[in-house]
Amino acid sequence: MKLLTLNFLTCARKACKATNAAFPLHPKDAELEIVEVELSPLFVRNILPRVEWEALRTLCQDLGLPQLPATAPEPGELFTPNPSDGVEGEGIEEVGEEGEPTQTLKDLHHVLLETTIREGKLVCGSCGHEYAVKEGIANFLLPSHLV
Amino acid sequence: MLPTPSTSHVSFDNIYEPAEDSFLLLDTLSSAPETAFLHSRFPPSAPPPLVLEVGTGSGVVLAFVASNASSILGRRDILALGTDINSFACRASSTTIRTAIADPRTSKPGHFLNVINADLTSLIRPGSVDVLIFNPPYVPTPDLPDLVTHEKYNALPLGTKSTTFEQDSHLLALSYAGGADGMEITNKLLAQLPEILHPARGVAYILLCAQNKPNDVKEYIVSWGKSWAVETVGFSGKKAGWEKLQILRIWRIAPSG
Ligand SMILES: [Zn+2]
Image (tube, rainbow over all chains, first blue to last red; front, side, top):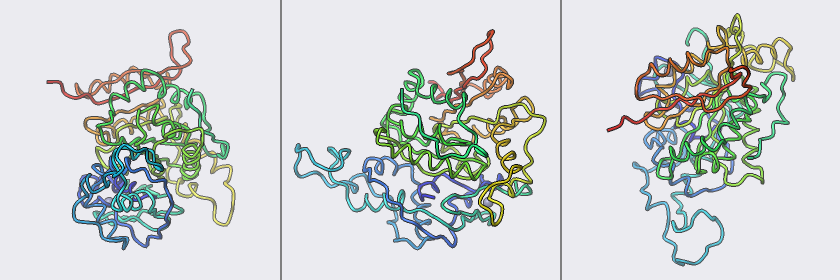
């Protein structure tokens, strides 16, 4: 399960959905797997405003990943201006006039899209319920007494 | 015609096989009026849309939208997310979507997140879904499948490599059995829409059959008030004035001046 996916999930219990503590879910005993994904610089730039930065920082902390900066990078930090302006660059066609993707952008791509939880649990900070992740598939089905 | 994703790896013993309803969704989502609607709703200035399919089954519909994102939504920075109550379907549909996106015939596909084993949208963060797609279990049945046995049937029996016949029957029933009027599951999903759809951009495509009483469903949406709209945007099997299947588009409209 990709870390970006967790940006859109909360605890499945009705009582938790309204509480702030149910987001983000906290990984526990997580076994990570890096799955390579083709870099799409404009996608990373565009998705950034949809990412709950504080939650992503918490997630990286929980997983023991390198600490993210306190605030989300500004768009200007994601590209270095292309020195050879007007010259058709080779490589990633999308870059265009944005310039070359910076290390900051590449790191974000790696965290959001390439870092996946293969095995482990996701724990709700409100009710403590643990959702299992097996072979990359998270199970959010609740036992009938908790629905 | 946009390419239809391959589902040749999917076991249809316990996963819903793409049928007329699935293909109606593909045709409708790629029709000129719907792509025009979606292009104008998600202009390049809008943030990347999150497309959630509830009950992915074989994965054919979400794979189609994800791999043809540029044609259908007018942009490739879309996020495809799925849920299914059947863990076998979660695995199969993930493969379908990954394969379709990697297909060399596909140009400029979107981004696939995951398919999660879950009950409808219970796990989705409120307000986060831009486009929701649902091909529900819509067949009227006396009862719904027993969820108490689901945990047992949702994984391979211990120490075995294949599912049992009862297990397969249970899992398939989840994909079609809709209870009274075939609407029991769809009604649950409809009740979740106001919470999970994005407050400005949210739109849902939901398939219904004639026995679901589509006009009643539309009246129900109208009763939500002026910030909601509903329209039939696709149908098939027109017979004696009855559409056998139809697709409703349910969307939020911005309060005007
Ligand atoms: Zn909880």
